[in-house]
Length: 250
Image 1: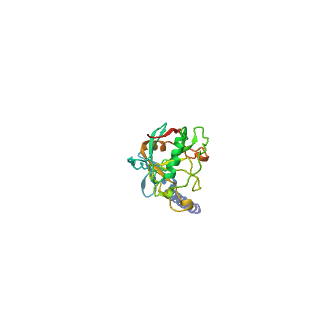
Image 2: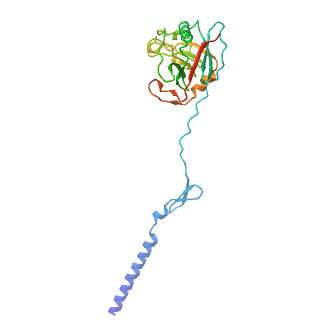
Image 3: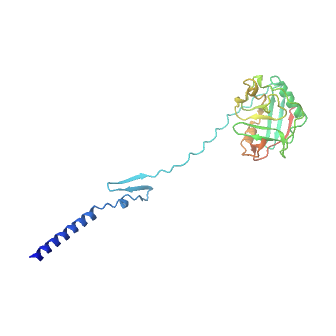
């Protein structure tokens, strides 16, 4: 009788352990397996959990495409005023004709003509170009040596009422107001910030003429890729732009 009682207790104990193990096994949540992402064949990432399957579209974040630079404002070559001098700038990229404003910029015009007649510009280069600014030349040779001015610096005529608009030609200078000698630049966009606005640093750059033929050549020059050679050649054209000669048109 005693042995039968012990056997009953043992059977009850084993039955209790078996039920507990089964319950634990059934209730075990394979969380890692359920939530493991599975990549499908259609470009979706499928995330599975105990409640549902969620499909989230992959988003490829790409950097924005660079904005294209706006095309330059169309340029209509103006007709020259009778009696105004015209100079022809012949380059290895083509020819540009410029009318000089002898009445509105007499000092700058006379100075430029002196350099033209002295053949100073022949064999110089456009050494500074920027497609959203201007093209500058007349002061350096092909070997990048500077060509010193032949004549004294001139008075700055930036207060003559003329504006640095696209297609105009103006005198380059240093930070000193009255320091222009030979170098000039052609505005390839409207650069009204270069206009006369007051004394000192606000005095501006003197416009003394305008392109009347060949603005497309100036645009071609401005579009040449640039390289940085340091010093005055931070915006140097990767292709040499040579001023073959500049002469007065008869």
